[in-house]
Length: 300
Image 1 (cartoon, rainbow, N blue to C red):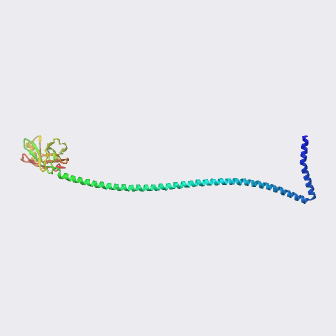
Image 2: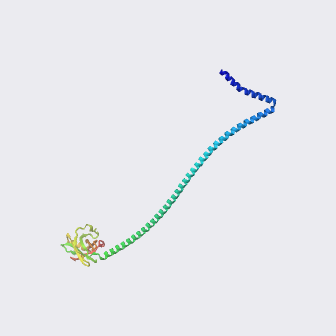
């Protein structure tokens, strides 16, 4: 039953095709030109329909594409606007940074000018201080010179004016003495002295041990324009005739030397050295004047 139905349906589909074919064949046989014209018209209609469908598809795609392009253009425009705004913001930031850099540069210039001005002020102050110091140094030097000149003028000056053999007798010990005088304007105080006697060969100048003198004697202050004297005997050495003859013949010499130490009224310590020697002694027995040595007679 089902097979019969399918056969009938198939026949229904085949019949129109056969009828159209038969009709087309009879038309061609009857009027060939009209049949060809009809065929061309059918082809034209079919191609027009196909072209119209294709154009509609193309239009639909173009419309869809244009919508997408418009959306892309809008998105691009928005992105461009955003980029422009960002660029504008960056430009503003760059301008602000440039302005800040200029302001910082101006501050640096002002600071440099201030530093230069401070340096100039410091140099000027240093020059003034140096000048003041030099003036003060000159004043101090002048004051010191004045003080030194005053001290030299007003201080005590002790000098030895004579050296003698105060005792020169055979059979007795030899005694030497020295007289010292204050030629200054003020007293000499804390006066201490030491004096020594030495007999030696004339061709040998002894080395006087001033710094090793130990027998210091204290004396009263010496007032200006006044004299004092000190003496010393040569212990355990008697003046025999033989020694006296050798002294007279210059085979031997007697040396008397010593040191004076004192202070002036300014509290400064001074020192005077003295030295004398015999130059031929005959019959004189006391107060024999000695000649001053070429050296070792000095004062400070």
